[in-house]
Image 1 (cartoon, rainbow, N blue to C red):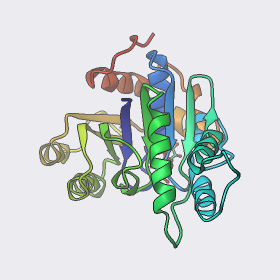
Image 2: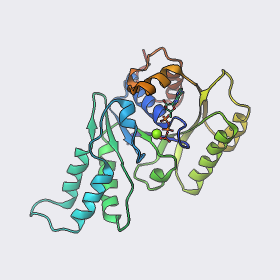
Image 3: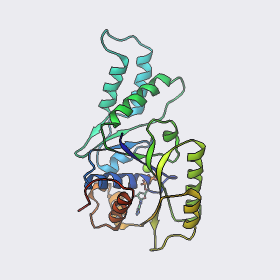
Image 4: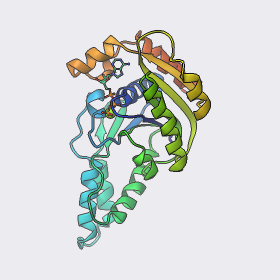
Length: 259
Ligand SMILES: Nc1ncnc2c1ncn2[C@@H]1O[C@H](COP(=O)(O)OP(=O)(O)OP(=O)(O)O)[C@@H](O)[C@H]1O
Ligand SMILES: [Mg+2]
Protein backbone atom coordinates (compact mmCIF):
# COMPACT_ATOMS: atom_id res chain seq x y z
CA UNK A 1 0.00 0.00 0.00
CA UNK A 2 1.34 3.44 -0.90
CA UNK A 3 1.73 6.32 1.54
CA UNK A 4 -0.82 8.97 0.56
CA UNK A 5 -0.42 12.68 1.27
CA UNK A 6 -3.50 14.79 0.41
CA UNK A 7 -3.42 18.59 0.28
CA UNK A 8 -6.70 20.41 0.92
CA UNK A 9 -7.76 23.99 1.51
CA UNK A 10 -9.88 26.76 0.08
CA UNK A 11 -9.22 28.37 -3.30
CA UNK A 12 -5.90 30.05 -3.96
CA UNK A 13 -4.20 29.35 -0.62
CA UNK A 14 -1.23 27.45 -2.05
CA UNK A 15 -2.42 23.82 -2.35
CA UNK A 16 -0.84 23.17 -5.75
CA UNK A 17 2.38 24.95 -4.78
CA UNK A 18 2.67 22.82 -1.65
CA UNK A 19 1.77 19.61 -3.52
CA UNK A 20 4.52 20.39 -6.05
CA UNK A 21 7.02 21.08 -3.28
CA UNK A 22 6.09 17.83 -1.54
CA UNK A 23 6.71 15.84 -4.73
CA UNK A 24 10.07 17.55 -5.14
CA UNK A 25 11.14 16.99 -1.54
CA UNK A 26 9.96 13.37 -1.45
CA UNK A 27 12.17 12.73 -4.47
CA UNK A 28 15.09 14.53 -2.78
CA UNK A 29 14.65 12.24 0.24
CA UNK A 30 15.00 9.20 -1.96
CA UNK A 31 11.27 8.37 -1.93
CA UNK A 32 10.91 8.10 -5.72
CA UNK A 33 8.96 7.16 -7.72
CA UNK A 34 6.16 9.45 -6.59
CA UNK A 35 2.73 9.48 -8.20
CA UNK A 36 1.33 13.01 -8.31
CA UNK A 37 -2.45 13.14 -8.70
CA UNK A 38 -4.03 16.37 -9.87
CA UNK A 39 -7.59 16.13 -8.61
CA UNK A 40 -8.47 19.71 -9.53
CA UNK A 41 -10.50 20.01 -12.74
CA UNK A 42 -8.68 23.28 -13.43
CA UNK A 43 -5.38 21.38 -13.53
CA UNK A 44 -2.25 23.27 -12.52
CA UNK A 45 -0.04 20.65 -10.94
CA UNK A 46 1.46 19.69 -14.31
CA UNK A 47 2.57 23.30 -14.82
CA UNK A 48 4.01 23.53 -11.32
CA UNK A 49 5.94 20.29 -11.90
CA UNK A 50 7.04 21.28 -15.40
CA UNK A 51 5.23 18.55 -17.35
CA UNK A 52 2.23 18.53 -19.66
CA UNK A 53 -0.95 16.47 -19.43
CA UNK A 54 -2.43 15.44 -22.76
CA UNK A 55 -5.31 13.29 -21.55
CA UNK A 56 -7.24 13.36 -18.29
CA UNK A 57 -9.03 10.62 -16.40
CA UNK A 58 -12.20 12.64 -17.02
CA UNK A 59 -11.72 12.01 -20.75
CA UNK A 60 -11.12 8.31 -20.08
CA UNK A 61 -14.30 8.25 -18.00
CA UNK A 62 -16.28 9.61 -20.94
CA UNK A 63 -14.74 6.96 -23.20
CA UNK A 64 -15.58 4.31 -20.61
CA UNK A 65 -19.20 5.33 -20.75
CA UNK A 66 -19.22 4.98 -24.52
CA UNK A 67 -17.43 1.65 -24.37
CA UNK A 68 -19.90 0.38 -21.77
CA UNK A 69 -22.70 0.91 -24.24
CA UNK A 70 -20.97 -0.78 -27.20
CA UNK A 71 -19.98 -4.30 -28.13
CA UNK A 72 -16.25 -4.91 -28.48
CA UNK A 73 -14.03 -7.00 -30.72
CA UNK A 74 -13.67 -10.57 -29.50
CA UNK A 75 -10.81 -11.04 -27.06
CA UNK A 76 -10.62 -7.47 -25.75
CA UNK A 77 -12.27 -6.98 -22.40
CA UNK A 78 -13.74 -3.58 -21.57
CA UNK A 79 -11.69 -3.58 -18.41
CA UNK A 80 -8.44 -4.21 -20.31
CA UNK A 81 -9.19 -1.49 -22.81
CA UNK A 82 -9.86 1.03 -20.08
CA UNK A 83 -6.77 0.04 -18.16
CA UNK A 84 -4.81 0.70 -21.31
CA UNK A 85 -6.43 4.09 -21.72
CA UNK A 86 -5.72 5.01 -18.11
CA UNK A 87 -2.08 4.04 -18.59
CA UNK A 88 -2.08 6.28 -21.67
CA UNK A 89 -3.14 9.27 -19.58
CA UNK A 90 -0.14 8.86 -17.26
CA UNK A 91 2.54 11.52 -17.73
CA UNK A 92 5.97 10.03 -17.05
CA UNK A 93 8.81 12.19 -15.75
CA UNK A 94 12.18 11.21 -14.31
CA UNK A 95 11.32 10.50 -10.66
CA UNK A 96 7.59 10.97 -10.68
CA UNK A 97 4.54 10.29 -12.78
CA UNK A 98 1.40 12.39 -12.90
CA UNK A 99 -2.25 11.74 -13.59
CA UNK A 100 -4.86 14.45 -13.87
CA UNK A 101 -8.43 13.64 -12.91
CA UNK A 102 -9.86 16.35 -15.18
CA UNK A 103 -13.47 17.36 -14.97
CA UNK A 104 -15.96 15.35 -13.00
CA UNK A 105 -18.80 13.45 -14.59
CA UNK A 106 -21.67 15.09 -16.41
CA UNK A 107 -25.27 13.93 -16.40
CA UNK A 108 -26.03 10.22 -16.79
CA UNK A 109 -24.82 7.04 -15.16
CA UNK A 110 -21.13 6.75 -14.51
CA UNK A 111 -21.28 3.81 -12.09
CA UNK A 112 -19.52 1.42 -14.45
CA UNK A 113 -16.92 3.97 -15.49
CA UNK A 114 -16.22 5.04 -11.92
CA UNK A 115 -15.86 1.47 -10.71
CA UNK A 116 -13.39 0.63 -13.45
CA UNK A 117 -11.47 3.82 -12.78
CA UNK A 118 -11.33 3.18 -9.08
CA UNK A 119 -9.98 -0.34 -9.57
CA UNK A 120 -7.50 0.64 -12.25
CA UNK A 121 -6.20 3.70 -10.38
CA UNK A 122 -6.01 1.66 -7.19
CA UNK A 123 -3.93 -1.01 -8.90
CA UNK A 124 -1.75 1.52 -10.68
CA UNK A 125 -1.06 3.57 -7.56
CA UNK A 126 0.01 0.46 -5.64
CA UNK A 127 3.12 0.49 -7.80
CA UNK A 128 4.25 3.78 -6.21
CA UNK A 129 5.52 4.01 -2.64
CA UNK A 130 4.31 7.63 -2.36
CA UNK A 131 1.27 9.45 -3.67
CA UNK A 132 0.67 13.20 -3.48
CA UNK A 133 -2.88 14.37 -4.17
CA UNK A 134 -3.61 17.99 -5.02
CA UNK A 135 -7.28 18.69 -4.43
CA UNK A 136 -9.73 21.21 -5.72
CA UNK A 137 -11.16 23.58 -3.10
CA UNK A 138 -13.55 20.93 -1.69
CA UNK A 139 -13.06 17.39 -0.46
CA UNK A 140 -15.25 15.68 -3.07
CA UNK A 141 -12.47 13.60 -4.59
CA UNK A 142 -11.63 12.16 -1.23
CA UNK A 143 -15.24 11.45 -0.39
CA UNK A 144 -15.78 9.73 -3.74
CA UNK A 145 -13.09 7.32 -2.61
CA UNK A 146 -11.23 7.42 -5.86
CA UNK A 147 -8.26 6.98 -3.59
CA UNK A 148 -7.41 4.92 -0.54
CA UNK A 149 -7.27 6.13 3.04
CA UNK A 150 -5.14 9.23 3.54
CA UNK A 151 -1.95 8.83 5.60
CA UNK A 152 -1.06 12.50 5.94
CA UNK A 153 -3.87 15.00 5.48
CA UNK A 154 -2.66 18.55 4.99
CA UNK A 155 -5.05 21.45 5.50
CA UNK A 156 -3.55 24.68 4.27
CA UNK A 157 -4.83 28.21 4.90
CA UNK A 158 -3.74 31.82 4.84
CA UNK A 159 -2.98 33.43 8.22
CA UNK A 160 -6.18 35.51 8.38
CA UNK A 161 -8.81 34.77 10.97
CA UNK A 162 -11.25 33.81 8.21
CA UNK A 163 -8.59 31.65 6.58
CA UNK A 164 -8.03 29.70 9.78
CA UNK A 165 -11.78 29.20 10.17
CA UNK A 166 -11.76 27.30 6.87
CA UNK A 167 -9.41 24.76 8.46
CA UNK A 168 -11.88 24.14 11.27
CA UNK A 169 -14.61 23.80 8.66
CA UNK A 170 -12.54 21.38 6.55
CA UNK A 171 -11.90 19.32 9.65
CA UNK A 172 -15.66 19.17 10.34
CA UNK A 173 -16.25 18.17 6.72
CA UNK A 174 -13.84 15.23 6.95
CA UNK A 175 -15.90 13.96 9.89
CA UNK A 176 -19.23 14.50 8.09
CA UNK A 177 -17.94 12.82 4.93
CA UNK A 178 -16.18 9.98 6.76
CA UNK A 179 -12.84 10.85 5.24
CA UNK A 180 -10.23 9.01 7.23
CA UNK A 181 -6.63 9.99 7.76
CA UNK A 182 -3.86 8.88 10.09
CA UNK A 183 -2.16 12.23 10.73
CA UNK A 184 -3.22 15.83 10.24
CA UNK A 185 -0.92 18.74 9.44
CA UNK A 186 -2.27 22.30 9.49
CA UNK A 187 -0.17 24.59 7.31
CA UNK A 188 -0.42 28.37 7.61
CA UNK A 189 0.89 29.73 4.33
CA UNK A 190 2.28 33.11 3.30
CA UNK A 191 3.18 34.34 6.77
CA UNK A 192 4.48 37.90 6.61
CA UNK A 193 6.33 37.70 9.91
CA UNK A 194 8.05 35.00 11.93
CA UNK A 195 5.18 34.45 14.33
CA UNK A 196 2.08 32.32 13.87
CA UNK A 197 -1.37 33.97 14.18
CA UNK A 198 -2.84 33.91 17.72
CA UNK A 199 -5.85 31.83 16.64
CA UNK A 200 -3.63 28.89 15.68
CA UNK A 201 -3.72 27.39 19.20
CA UNK A 202 -7.50 27.22 19.02
CA UNK A 203 -7.34 25.60 15.57
CA UNK A 204 -4.84 23.05 16.83
CA UNK A 205 -7.10 22.17 19.73
CA UNK A 206 -10.32 21.89 17.71
CA UNK A 207 -8.83 19.89 14.87
CA UNK A 208 -6.49 17.75 16.97
CA UNK A 209 -3.74 18.48 14.44
CA UNK A 210 -0.58 16.40 14.87
CA UNK A 211 1.57 19.08 13.22
CA UNK A 212 1.14 22.82 12.85
CA UNK A 213 3.58 24.58 10.57
CA UNK A 214 3.97 28.02 9.07
CA UNK A 215 5.39 28.83 5.63
CA UNK A 216 6.68 32.33 4.91
CA UNK A 217 5.48 34.48 2.06
CA UNK A 218 8.34 33.76 -0.29
CA UNK A 219 9.74 35.87 -3.14
CA UNK A 220 11.36 32.90 -4.86
CA UNK A 221 8.06 30.99 -5.10
CA UNK A 222 6.26 34.12 -6.30
CA UNK A 223 8.96 34.68 -8.95
CA UNK A 224 8.84 31.08 -10.17
CA UNK A 225 5.06 31.38 -10.52
CA UNK A 226 5.28 34.75 -12.24
CA UNK A 227 7.76 33.45 -14.80
CA UNK A 228 5.78 30.23 -15.27
CA UNK A 229 8.75 28.16 -14.12
CA UNK A 230 8.45 24.76 -12.51
CA UNK A 231 8.75 24.50 -8.74
CA UNK A 232 11.28 21.72 -9.16
CA UNK A 233 13.78 24.55 -9.65
CA UNK A 234 13.35 25.89 -6.10
CA UNK A 235 16.72 26.38 -4.43
CA UNK A 236 17.60 23.81 -1.79
CA UNK A 237 18.50 26.54 0.72
CA UNK A 238 15.00 28.06 0.54
CA UNK A 239 13.57 28.24 4.09
CA UNK A 240 10.35 26.55 2.91
CA UNK A 241 12.31 23.52 1.70
CA UNK A 242 13.78 23.00 5.20
CA UNK A 243 10.33 23.36 6.80
CA UNK A 244 8.79 20.78 4.45
CA UNK A 245 11.69 18.39 4.97
CA UNK A 246 11.18 18.74 8.69
CA UNK A 247 7.46 17.97 8.36
CA UNK A 248 8.18 14.84 6.32
CA UNK A 249 10.73 13.78 8.89
CA UNK A 250 8.34 14.37 11.79
CA UNK A 251 5.61 12.45 9.99
CA UNK A 252 8.02 9.53 10.17
CA UNK A 253 8.57 9.10 6.47
CA UNK A 254 11.42 6.79 5.71
CA UNK A 255 14.05 7.70 3.17
CA UNK A 256 17.41 9.35 2.99
CA UNK A 257 17.92 12.56 4.80
CA UNK A 258 17.92 15.48 2.39
CA UNK A 259 21.35 16.70 1.38
N1 LIG B 1 4.48 30.72 0.40
C1 LIG B 1 4.25 31.39 -0.74
N2 LIG B 1 4.93 32.50 -1.03
C2 LIG B 1 4.69 33.21 -2.16
N3 LIG B 1 3.77 32.87 -3.07
C3 LIG B 1 3.04 31.76 -2.83
C4 LIG B 1 3.25 30.95 -1.67
N4 LIG B 1 2.37 29.92 -1.72
C5 LIG B 1 1.66 30.07 -2.85
N5 LIG B 1 2.05 31.17 -3.52
C6 LIG B 1 1.47 31.69 -4.78
O1 LIG B 1 0.07 31.85 -4.59
C7 LIG B 1 -0.62 31.58 -5.79
C8 LIG B 1 -1.69 30.54 -5.54
O2 LIG B 1 -1.06 29.33 -5.20
P1 LIG B 1 -1.63 27.92 -5.67
O3 LIG B 1 -1.97 27.91 -7.11
O4 LIG B 1 -0.66 26.91 -5.18
O5 LIG B 1 -2.97 27.86 -4.83
P2 LIG B 1 -4.14 26.79 -4.90
O6 LIG B 1 -4.66 26.66 -3.50
O7 LIG B 1 -3.66 25.55 -5.55
O8 LIG B 1 -5.20 27.51 -5.82
P3 LIG B 1 -6.51 26.87 -6.51
O9 LIG B 1 -7.53 26.76 -5.41
O10 LIG B 1 -6.87 27.86 -7.54
O11 LIG B 1 -6.11 25.53 -7.05
C9 LIG B 1 0.44 31.13 -6.80
O12 LIG B 1 0.77 32.21 -7.62
C10 LIG B 1 1.62 30.73 -5.94
O13 LIG B 1 2.86 30.89 -6.58
MG1 LIG C 1 -4.47 24.42 -7.16
